[in-house]
Image (cartoon, rainbow, N blue to C red; front, side, top):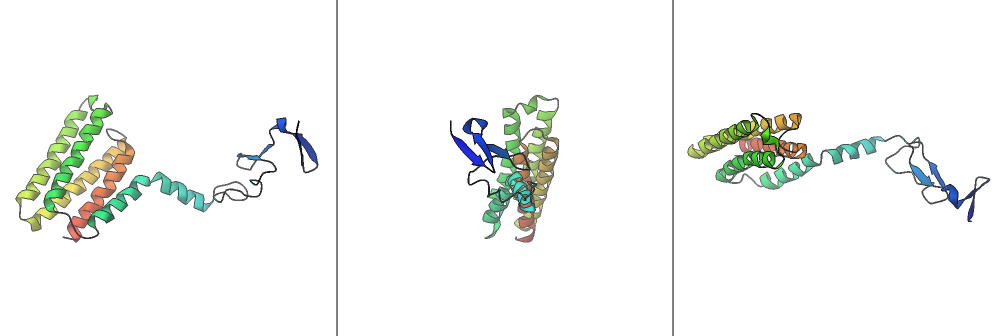
Length: 184
């Protein structure tokens, strides 16, 4: 049986040759891990501010993805009013699709509420298309802001769509509405 000398103590390989850090993480004794604590942990094993920021960034990945999409979409100006109007209808239809796939529309009133949302956002999109474009942008922005509120409601209630989808869509809708108001 192999033996290693560790601080005046002889241990056998069968004794697992491990130790724990202050945070309880197992570490191999005598390995290169001994002197290299993870960079996100302090000497006492507690999380550092960097670790907290990294954890927050990982947790909010839908927001970061939405920000990238919004910048890519609106950085060089607005897409056509018609495209964004149909996109509002498509985003609303996604709630019906998600709700059906997840079995969430079986609850009492859920299908009626989601259908009403689709029809309401669809109506705003059609009104925006029927108007003069200078005013239509504001009507469509109102629809996108309304859909952002719809997303927030679904995020908070944890129903119909995954929370990551609701978070992502909220950010896209909010930034899209702002672009329609301020860029056009």
